[in-house]
Image 1 (spheres, rainbow, N blue to C red):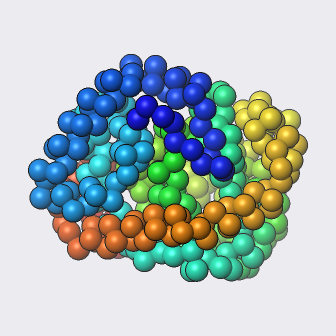
Image 2 (image 1 turned 45 degrees about the vertical axis):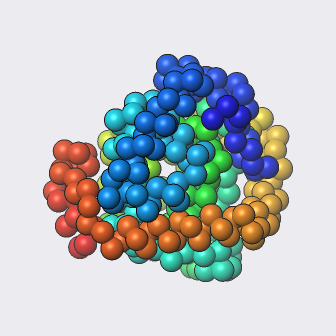
Length: 312
């Protein structure tokens, strides 16, 4: 890709692109050669021939970055993405924007427009508004629908998550954090998409935050669990994420999360967004019917049988 992708709410600048490509020893000519080879391979794979037409050029290059610039690792990344989504239909199948009309009553989930200059990570914010109305499965379906839409516009290999717990008051909230569902989400994110989590930042934590941290760590790989941080102030957060790319909700310089939320709602209603989401639905439906590309325990990087885990 000779031109960087553009999206009004997902800024990618030339400096970000240069840093990422340099870190992977890639240039424009090498990328083009590699992507041509990957596309030729994919069209010869029986289980990928139809699926590959739903992968946009921008998405393919992103998968190449997530494959660390390696042709063979990118092939593996494509196989794992397609297979993992098909094996988790409760999270990935038959989603639409209309399904989430009322989700903002429970949470505000927004992707911030600027990448971090520290590691080119994309910052994702989840603000709990009403825990009584919160549904973990609805949240995950929404978050991964947005993630798949974003893959057509992103140019980065890592992300950071901010979880604002200001409105979580009762310890009974823990009953909504299903460890198995959290583990499935972790598998989809890390093994399916191959996205690296640079940090998980908890803000405005309640007195029982240690129990929330414990539950989250059970669902995360040790490396990611060690990147989970509880901040007692916004100044502490600014040491990890510069205030110039944060919303004013967290002492930053950007517009508020509520304002960004309204902008994202408008974007998701556009014809382009609807088409991309519909294409993903078609692809996941096909994936869920297949049983190709089974992975062993070492390959998935987790104990026990992957297939058994997601069926239980």
